[in-house]
Length: 336
Image 1 (cartoon, rainbow, N blue to C red):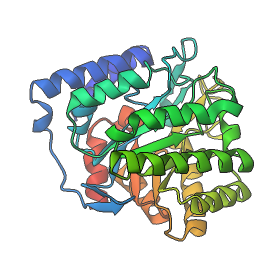
Image 2 (cartoon, rainbow, N blue to C red):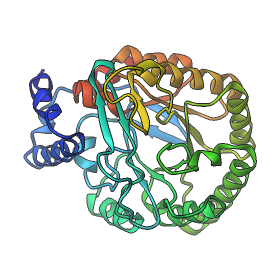
Image 3 (cartoon, rainbow, N blue to C red):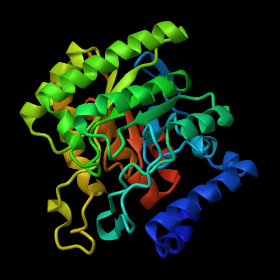
């Protein structure tokens, strides 16, 4: 109810300014103990990836790229938080403006470009947070790292975040880093997953704990591509798959203001495409690899749709911007 009153003021701001303002406000409210007054739903615990999640509803990567707001976001009732995408070196991302609202479609287009302050800064933030809940850390490659050396960036990040993460997500599906999605293709993905699994094994021995690895994929895949990815996930014993990232398709928003902006489209228009990928993955994976469903969840029923399609867990992002924190409680209740 309160968010309904606040939203017009937030939407009067530039989207990135509204993003920063909201996170700063959440931090203040958390420090003042106000977030603890929000009504909570009692969630149904879920065991996936070898991890016990207090509930099935998580925050998707991208909202807190540097892990600077973990505790405030967790106080909204999420069962898990995913931060990042983080890269080995700091980078500014793409030129502004780079985020656009499409309110009629409950959608957002972004071309942020992995803007972040680098993996060392993120690790310091995580350590300072003292957070004890389930924390995913999403890793990527720097824009100026050619694809033939991408594995080096992913391994560098994995080395640094491993001890601080409950699970690590390998992001090869953002449309906003040139040619990144090429890493989803058979040979490139096979080589990347092989290197990641080898390093994961070495790090597990070094740190005395096994940290699961998830792969985040795009919605813009045909059935043959989904089948090939599923086969590689099983072959390399990847611990989970996150489906999906944003879409480059514009069919659902054609003709709307900002619809022709370059970048990834998220929110309600990606819901069906994301659910299709989940359903196809589930058909091939046969419960061998858990699926995290994300894309276009704006209600508890949308969250349930992802679970019915084969997901074990769900994540929210754009829905939060349009519906506010109440969406977390609604989804937790619906999946309980």
